[in-house]
Image (cartoon, rainbow, N blue to C red; front, side, top):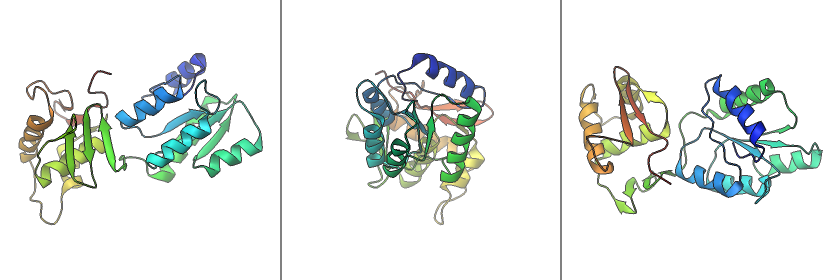
Length: 225
């Protein structure tokens, strides 16, 4: 959520949190864009009137980088603003003040329409780690970290759903291809080798975490700012 009204941001975060969403708040546009470049998010709630950049420009920049769903919020009820927002790529537009239940309904509707589960950006960035799907490369601090094809696919499957626990069965389904053998417990071996390539200390991982009895989760926040 990119919103400079701290009270509103707190209210929305609390309400959406009760309905299963984890909300990260940025009070300024540049901070929001920086967070988006570093982490994997399912959607953006974007205020139009921000102290550094207006929301329309922020939306343009988001659209230039990918297809992340954007719901714009504004205190201005002008139809022209709504039309401009939609024309530059916003998925929906909600005037303030709004009922949190309507915000939740619109957000869920956007996610359903867009099928916004996995993150589909060409390059996924998590702090110092970059996953370049087009080049099929993983870079840490700009240096390529070698992975096999199967390990790369497994890492992408985890990173696309950052913050969500994925069972071994789900991971098997996502990465299984015509040439890929059934993983079963060998997923653990692949994860171990991926950790060796991308973790500072593979024995105490910060990027790919084990959830005992459930599977693995790729952490959204991994490096210090």
